[in-house]
Image 1 (spheres, helix red, strand yellow):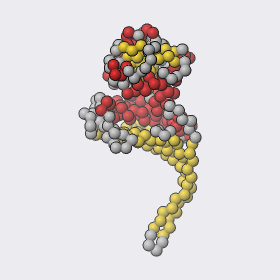
Image 2: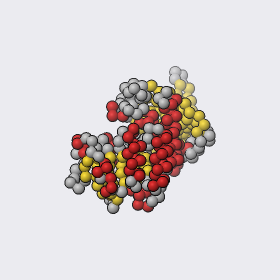
Image 3: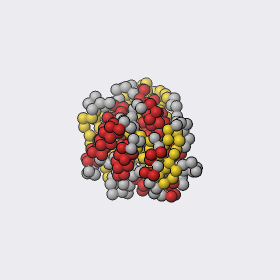
Image 4: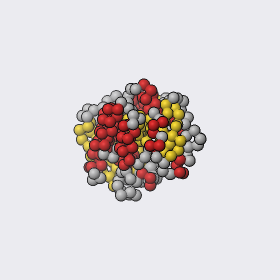
Length: 314
């Protein structure tokens, strides 16, 4: 039985508490948050509830940290030094120096340091990676209405980092050029951003993120030589479109374009990505393997910060 503690019971922390309370082999032992209202999200006399995690940190094997980004480094570093495994909500930290310091600390103390990139555990992404080969163009759209609680981070650090992480993992080739445009709408930072990436193998990626849109959209499209793959993150659906033929018909008073093709819908085993993320964290603790993934976690953060620099935010 792995004993877990959760630090921060806000939006994501509340979800983590619900998931952890229903996992076999896991005991949600304690939670910490300065807000009494947030602490009340978790019911049960068996769970220790405090404003300060230091009151119970020695009673748990690992912690899930879901606090504001600026607090990540200090709290995660303290927990790692106490020998505790850490699942840290994304982004890892708000600067590269702190990110590298946490990775080195986790390696030194031989503890897990996982970052909450939830889309890695989306069933559709797992299936998509099986059918991608030599992608020519990748298009990502992640947008929705503005939420005040995320105003402290730019849309790049808040939303786009998910797609940056996925594209890097899918393409697996050195990045050779990067361009970005953005604007602010509701926050003092950046609320709409578009990024173009080109990789050494020739793949081009276009990423659009917005938190100033009236429609919520989470999708990825992959163009390959003989097929077009479309993924909807929300429904976890994948469709494969293949072009067969096209023709132009000229009539006496009109011009018609006709295109024929096929659409294949891929079976995706659908599960709660957050549950799978926490399960992966627990298995890592139990097995002592896959404790830290600095190449993927730090690289995604590095490019995220470079985009923010191009947008004049750093």
